[in-house]
Length: 190
Image 1 (cartoon, one colour):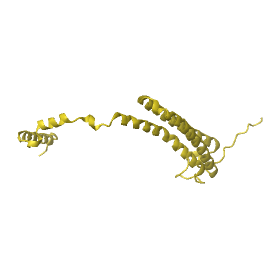
Image 2: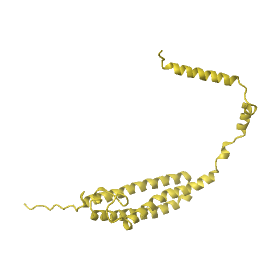
Image 3: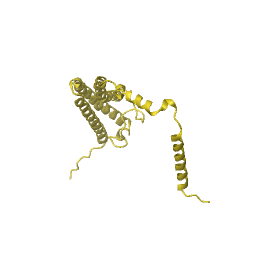
């Protein structure tokens, strides 16, 4: 005997209908009637669950300052690590890794120094600039402060990407894929 695909659905619907009809005819417990639930909900004020606006906006200034300052500080720390703590030879675990900087020890060391100088310098400059900008957050309106913090974050990302791009292009211009210096082509005298 074959069953059609709609038979299980029909039996499920019938089971639900009978369950709902028996639930409607049963009496409810005395503590769960609708009127007592309505009274409870009328006395409930969801605004009491929210913190005061001064607490929210007071901490918002701190959050914006932290968000603006964390990127430059990380850049500064990474730059110092690349300058002073990078391994002597290329590896895949620690250090600034780029395709043209991993071919030889000479290319690796050059890339680490360059990354340390560029990212550390960028981190130092951005830290000073962001300290000045975030110092003015307290006197700003809330929406202006949030938009200014977002602008700062976008500029930090753009400058970091430009810095890493400059490091990679410099390493590619100086070294080939084996880590050897690129030979300069001399003009031929004809």
